[in-house]
Image (cartoon, rainbow, N blue to C red; front, side, top):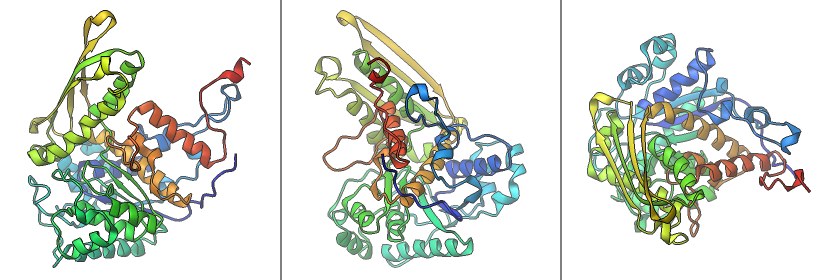
Length: 436
């Protein structure tokens, strides 16, 4: 196979983070710690993953970072926006995810990263408010202010390339409006302060106008509208989203494909979470929770494919709850009860209790997505990057397609895309060559 021409990862890569809260500060502190040899990048496919090449008997499984020209961690520079003006050290201490002993070892570098004023409107995130917010006569002006921040950051740090990842809060539930249907309509909506253009879309627009790859880490309606797809095509920019697949939904996309593979029926799947960080506080608002609920509930529908297996999955009672519980902080707990149906209709149950750490699971995803989006841009790829759906609860996809949610199919797609990039044969796992 012929490899894709990929520009080298020369110079420095700027990683723009919208929201310098628990997830972003955990990512930044983690990268700094790995650079210093204080810890290891556990959970990051880009840093620790391998890629099988050729037959199983070839015994070729190099590290992904050794066969793909990814930006090195030493070349990454972080910047971002937040409605609170705490520097990254202060924000990390407030988030309470990482131990103070670790944070103090990298304190000067964290303190040097200070947030720029954010585009923020309580109309879209009702449980938060802060002083570090941009002002302007209309939303186009706010977008231009974001562009100015980006350009200054690039010049100040002499950056060669940039990517942007939304790590901010979940906005209220929104559906597509006329302002979303074309780039012209969207830009008119920015000038008119259209209510259907939330803060996240302003960041998306600013990034894509600058040709900067954009990833949406929340379930917000952001880059998955026709106007942003049009803009991404115009500027030849990769986009991907939405909603990082971290705790409970990660487990669902592991367990549900296994149940379906064995053709075990499911009568009901009850999921509840307790979470005490800022994300939990935001999701305590019913309108923001609606956005998250839609993202989390769609997973089982697409995996089980009830139209193909009506006897097994026609009426799955799928319930999702998120409860804000401040004492738990970032230590999220997910409880799942699955009511199963087996041979001859006999009933069984599966119970899962996942005591996880929300930002610890999310940070390596943000790193991978940023590095792989930068790779996609240098490889000449643009528009929706479905091969990165492995990382998202509600993968963005082309119109008319259903999203693939099976984690193992997603991983095969991701790794086959990597093989395609470097001109290696795709792996189908057919395996007849070992026996014919």
